[in-house]
Length: 347
Figure (cartoon, helix red, strand yellow):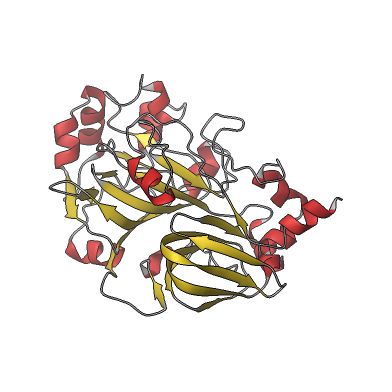
């Protein structure tokens, strides 16, 4: 093996933008964060340190390392260096994590994602797609997200809405939640949801691109692409029809804007079996782990215990291998640190 390969699996690496084309508008806030001029109309998602491809694609969505390899292939070549022994024992050579910047330049359609069980049965995947949103910016008069049905909805009612593409009924059935920077939302698999125009998030997901798009008309070209190649009735089996009352919503949503300690745990407790995220500010120690850093403000350095330093600035997106060891964040900066679940946290 070449020394370049060895080096890249033991030190933190800054990565460029990775914006596979999507069906909806956005991207201006990603460009502004990164300080570049690429504000393409249909570049609303930046897949950071991604080892996941877009559904049905061979390479689109993957992140490339500076040496030219896909990160996915580098992890497969040296999983214990990248991920750590305990992680590999629990999850194999999967990072068990997909991180995105998502800039909604328009409202997204009502959709949901399959559970692990459904994905195993119907999609040949160990992972479904539970996700979480960390709101890092908002614009416009009414930045909102839509999460879960307000009341229980019978399966036949949902099927009728989807068959007739009754957008107003689908959107109107969901809880509408105003959001501001610092808010976080845990989105369990099966939850119907939509992200409103003007909401800019760091999104953590299980490492798949599985979406069941209930409201596809006006967004996707046809119904076939809305249901992951399944028939409508089968695809909708993964949907959670239960109403989310205030107690349920309170268990999924956190408000962290007023917390200003060096390390702030961002996500609801129920997210822990799927991923972890902290907001870091100033000088903070990082334990050895595969992780993704997204710098929201300021400048500084990431010093690894192997002696390597990486300069950081607003807009930096960084992949950190487990083999980089313990690290120290230094400087006047604010970053989101995303990690896979701990090896013992899955059910």
